[in-house]
Image (cartoon, rainbow over all chains, first blue to last red; front, top):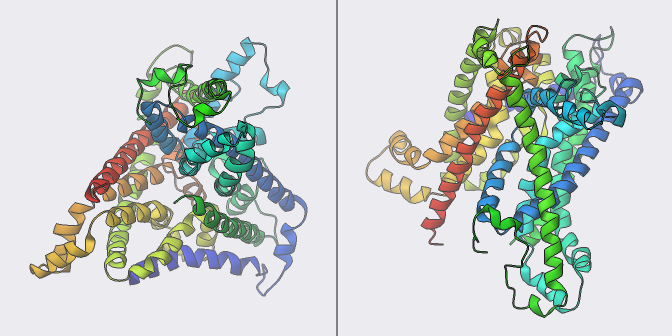
Length: 271
Length: 289
């Protein structure tokens, strides 16, 4: 037990504490609030706004689509298909990082396979506002592992929807629509929200894909931290990077607290 | 729900499942049929979305600069400047991470399971922290306060990868240990005169082999895919090499290397998923369910 405590303290505790400590230190020593003040304005605030936007959109879009996909898989009669989808979700949810970036460059980049196909159909990606090397591209790439992640998270909850609830609703003359409105969705909602919070956290904090796809040109908090580490710093601001990291920690801490509350509620139906 | 036919049965339109109660409700078969159409559309769209990038990756990998079918990219990959060095570094880091992670986590998990089960909840929380605190935040803290001699070594990355792998490794070991009757096994071994080390080596480890293997595989996948920490700590591991490789010379090599990475991870993960399944089947049988 002792080695584990020491190891996690060194590898997890010290870096986290260092971020909090350095966020309130001035460049020439002493305590200060100027770093924290700095990230509430200008380009760093935009970074937070963009990161939050990216997190929210990738919680909502793959989150909602994932529920439909999971339901489609779950209600399928074919065992083979369900097992195949379960394995595929488990594998695809762990994709990501830079390998995925390059596969998408081969797909939707300027000389990508899908780009050419769409061009043959007369659709120009740029004219519908899509650019792989920007915000919309990052969103589409994230969806590739977030959709399976949502399927993994939501499938057990769908299994908790008992057939006799639906039968009871139907017996009382409820339409499918009313069944979902009054039974299905309220029961699933905590699980759906929990899954969406996970998606939010993963998109909000991810660095590799966004950095390599946009060459670091997009204003997102993780990329701004990376710029500080790469030495692209204005003199007198060397501690602002820590303040951004500190801000991210706070947002993620709130996310996790809400997540654990939602989870508690979700487990109620999953006996 | 019994399996009905092969995968093709999905596309049949008639209502297969007979729910005695549902038959009384009006208009039910019609609705079911509509749901099937809807499901077909969803599954086909999802299939297209997930398969096109894989197809594109394969197509790009097996094309040369002139656009003809060729395995040039894969043949040129080993001799591409810097690739062997990056691969060697990644292999070394992977080995160090797996060894340290195993030596650290296996005794800890066993100790907590056998001696202090009430700490399991605490360990659950601690080991999930590396998911909550993102790598980008950890690495800025590490590079800020760690001493120079530590930052000069690539093995600082291994040190941190053990932390990043902790959620997967602990969960895998925890599930493996939960599936066996650890207490009885330990007591039996001790009463036969086995010391702690012998119990661990000859009794417990063979029983959690699938869990150990899946923990190792997940760690390997993590080390070979990690970009954030490696690039910011300025070490050229395989993912960093792929990004830095000069695109103007041959972009197909980058895609080919990524494809190898994805397919490699894929094989490893399919292995883990099937291991998990066989393990849970075994533990279910043990419980007599």
